[in-house]
Length: 106
Image 1 (cartoon, rainbow, N blue to C red):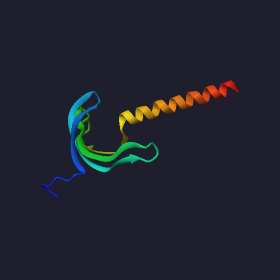
Image 2 (spheres, helix red, strand yellow; image 1 turned 30 degrees about the vertical axis):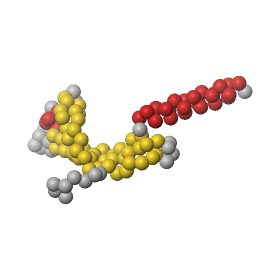
Image 3 (cartoon, rainbow, N blue to C red; image 1 turned 45 degrees about the horizontal axis):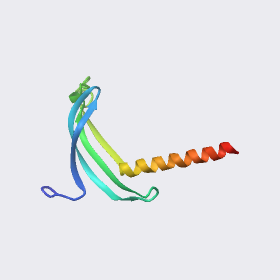
């Protein structure tokens, strides 16, 4: 809806580097779900982001207009909370090292 703010929609702006050229890019983001990853039991978020870039903005405009200058970018992502995931990876590594030591003793 034009002019309304939806709780699951965002505009995210950041720097994108392509082919050694960095430009500010704004993507339209839809949050699919915020919750707990059932397998890892960590806070998680799923989202999709979309936007349109111009190849020529990144010095990749060769053959324009024979080849379209516009590129549609679509990102689908699921992310776990960083500190919790780091702790999960450390615990997993400790378990793997313990299992390796146990196997080596046999």
